[in-house]
Image 1: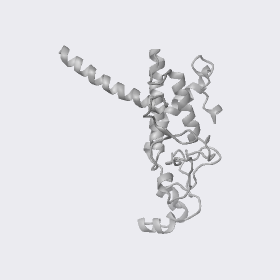
Image 2: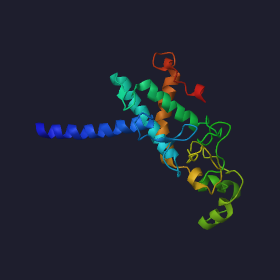
Image 3: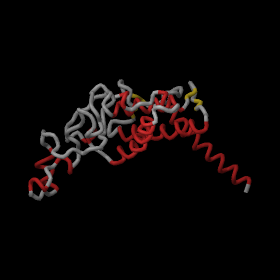
Image 4: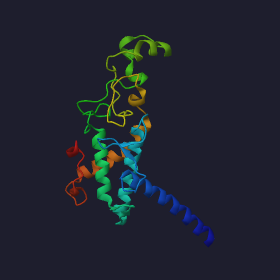
Length: 220
């Protein structure tokens, strides 16, 4: 039994090592294998729907920040040691970028802020609702009549996180540009936990944890 426990501990340590390597890569604290960033500072993995990687990364960073804070530990990366506050500060920078603090001046969370994607690649959002038109629209009709329209979507897909900008922080708001304009549930889902954490800090700004300056609103 003791030998089995040691084996399990060794496996868990491997998982921990890989997880910490990834955290350090997001923070640009590894010697060479770091996550690429756009000139505007957004984590960048690939062209197609890059925001899915950003939202999951900031969720993991938020959870790990909580772990370090609860255990009063530091993360020792190859080039530097970081604490929970520094990690959470980086999380805030990514959230700020998503919500409009970026070279395009565009919120990639649909429905948030004065400027956001108006031509999301989404069938339901891009077609006039039946309650207004009273006309049934089939699959081919939806593509033929609505997909190529230049007008903004008639339905605002509030809360959807689109694929986001390319490696140069550029974004083309065109319905057919699905690489950037497609919205997925797995883009938005991780942000729910991150927003909950930041909202908690915002509400508790008078206590010692939030007094470090973690204000979501002030960073936008």
